[in-house]
Image 1: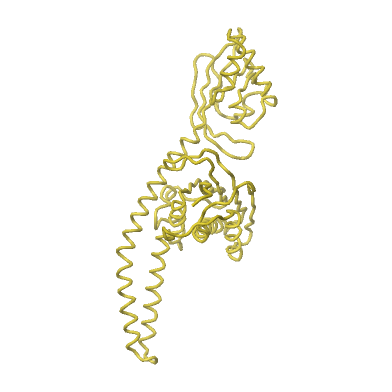
Image 2: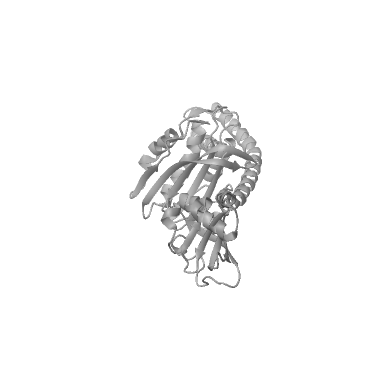
Length: 364
């Protein structure tokens, strides 16, 4: 920061501004600003840029700008004629997180020294809002389908079950027809439970304070016997996350669906299943901004989700697995929505991430 201020002071002096005003302008900007000289060496980086790249200004001053933004321009190279804007550049941070940015590069001269000014805008939030909006539409469409299906299916099923039970009472215990009636009863109950799973937990379910890591521990305990050979689990927890108001059983079901999917994706080749927890500050979900949001990431190294179904994975009955019901993700999303949260996915071969966003509300 001290180096940035000193660099800012030099730029301010070159531009004829008062030092104090220049420092406030450059260091107070939320836009990331970098200035490089004619040798393409970084000579100034403001506080916002240092935070974006997760580096100290002292470490990057004097190095080639491509060390922190490799392959951003491709074969274009810098030009001294006009400014250019690069959209959708994927910036890889030191903690392995990937964020999307837009960068405007302009020829800029200080004190007769030629160079370029980089203005970098973090567009990850915009992309997340657009993606979140799409997930909301999927949730609403799925909910409508679920309610319609429940109305159309549960009532006939109840009638079939009642009639079957009456027939069972009219037959003697040694009657062979009882075997068939028992099959009918079991199948009707199975279909009823299937519809209930689609509906998810009851809306009036009790929520209590729980440690989200205890929920994850319980899920891993359940899935331990089902874990495919060659699949290993890595836990990357933020111990500072406080207890959260959740329906324990419902949240277990939601995370269980996600963890099972991740394990199944690595059945053939194995890999690392990573469960990571973090806290996001001033995070917007839907139309409400929360001071703190817990982010639970389920990351697998499986084959990835096919592009043909990726945009529809949260719709009921959509699945890429031959034996899948297409209900796991819609049910999980339904659980999170009942907790004012959301699930967002991204996938490519070898890496699939499901981020579970859960507001840190400590009161009912």
